[in-house]
Length: 152
Image (tube, rainbow, N blue to C red; front, side, top):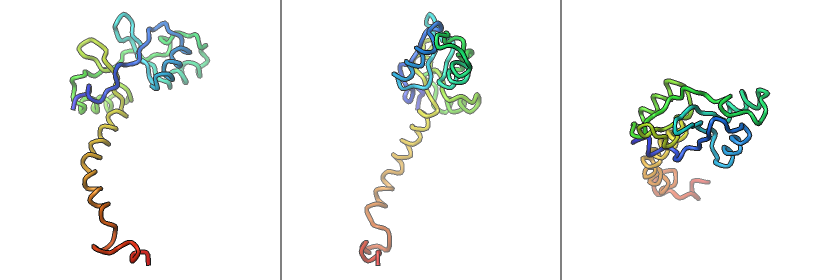
């Protein structure tokens, strides 16, 4: 399976000069925990809700501070065509929870560790679903026993 099949697209992005208060509003409205910082089509960094809470507003910076003051730069990315195993390896190697996804040099989305875990859960459900239904069709106990006789 490819990263493009599990990523969130499009990514929520802001220019580096946007104030932290506006970034937090965008995160809340979009239901995301991170925003990519993009300037002239180039990925400059990423900022997470934790970055804002710890290094930004929680660190005493005013709400009007530009997001570039708290963003992480030198962001590691994955390609949309990469296998999800490549993304798993990258997550493990660098210890982050979100990776911007590129198609060539173009930003196309974000993949999170949660996206990959949901994919694993879906696969398990597909695999175990038929087994679970076959087990649930028969009540527990010896074959042919009904629930009333088991309760006594």
